[in-house]
Image 1 (cartoon, rainbow, N blue to C red):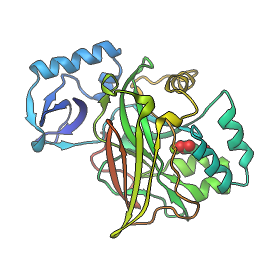
Image 2: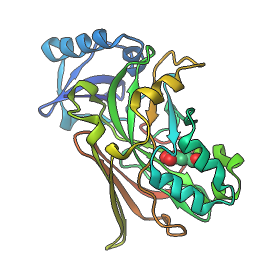
Image 3: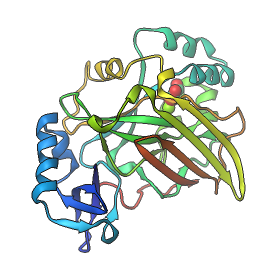
Image 4: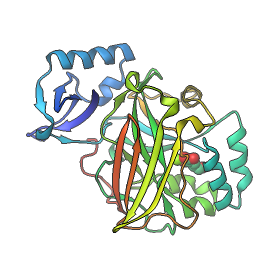
Length: 291
Ligand code: DO4
Ligand code: MG
C-alpha cells in the first residue's frame, strides 16, 4: 500500500491509501494533517481507511504531487563519494566539497515548498540561464513533525550545475527554481521498505530515440546514515507539517553532458517507485501541485 494525494471528479484534493487498483480515502483534510501525527497514529489512520474508507478506482482519479500545506523539501549534499568527486571536478572551490564530505556536519539546504514541487509526468527541471543542468536521482525520506521517518519517495534534485560551479554561494539559485524539485507520486510507508540501506537507484536520460545516459548506484554507498541526516536537519528548526529530506546523489552525469530541453529523465528506486519528467524551463506553478 501507498499514501497518495489525488483529485476526485469534483476536482477536490484528497488523501488516500492506494492498494490493489483502488484508493481508500483517509479521513484527513490534507497530507500535512497526517504528517503532524506521530507515526503510530498515522499508521492507524491508514488502517482505518483500508478497513472503512470510501473506495474509488485508481483509474477514476488524478494523482497529485505527494505533499501539501506547509510541508517543505530539503536536500542533503555530498553524501556519496561520486558527488564529492563531481563537485571537486566542476568547481574551483574544491576544498569546500572535500571538507563537507568528511565533516561531522552534513550539507543541508532548502529545496522547495510543497506548492512548487514538480509532479511525476510534468515538464520542468531547467532554468534558462544555466548552461549545464543535471538530474540528481535521490532517495527522499518523508518525515513527520516528530522527526520520525514515515515513508519514502523518489526525488530528482535537479540542479543548475553551471551556476553552482561558478560560485558555491550561488547554491540557492542552482538548487531552487521553478521545476527543480521533482517528487514521485506515492509515499511508500517506511515499514514496507525492506532494506533502505541497500536500495538500487537508477537514472536514465533519453534524447529522442537515444539513451544518452544510464547509471546506477546503491544507498549502501552513502557516507552518512539516514538517522544522522534527520538528527542534523531537526537540530535548530521545526517542521510543523513535516518535511521531505532528499538524501543526496550517488550518480552525476559527466561534466558538460547535462540534460537538454526535451530529454526524458527517469529515476527508479527499487521498492520505492519511479519518476519521469521531460526537461523544459518550467512554468512557475506546476499544475497538480499542492494547493
Ligand atoms: O553542494 C552541492 C549539492 C550536492 C547535492 O545536492 C548532492 O550531493 O546530492
Ligand atoms: Mg542532490
